[in-house]
Image 1: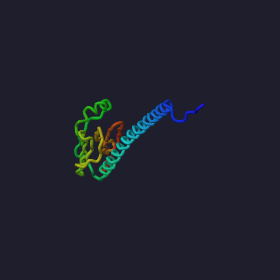
Image 2: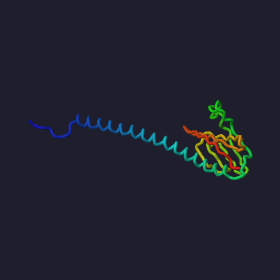
Image 3: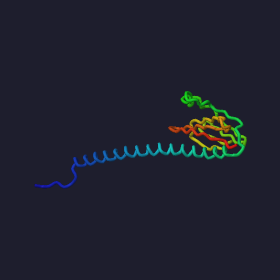
Length: 158
């Protein structure tokens, strides 16, 4: 009897099928990995933008004698929070006596201090001023992004 040495057609076909299955499994796993990395990087970017805005705004509210000169914002009652996305095409701003103005411009999803863009990829921002019972003035800022919403209340130093 003679033994056959070499690769048969059946073994090549099985080898190719196994390799295709392995490549498709690796492709699926890689796509899930990169999708999760992209989602995480977007959330981290929004946190960075909020932190950058927060650092500028904290400096502003901690200036002694700084008062609110003008404020224009949408009302933010809880029943109207859902309609905030529908009516957020208006510019919201707050002007301080120091001369600095913080403006949210929805067309380019940015928050500006005077004419300098200090935060981007923001889908909504509102400013609300209140006079507290102790005589202090507070400013509540709500910043929204994709799957991101932060509400912060600042107290002006007088």
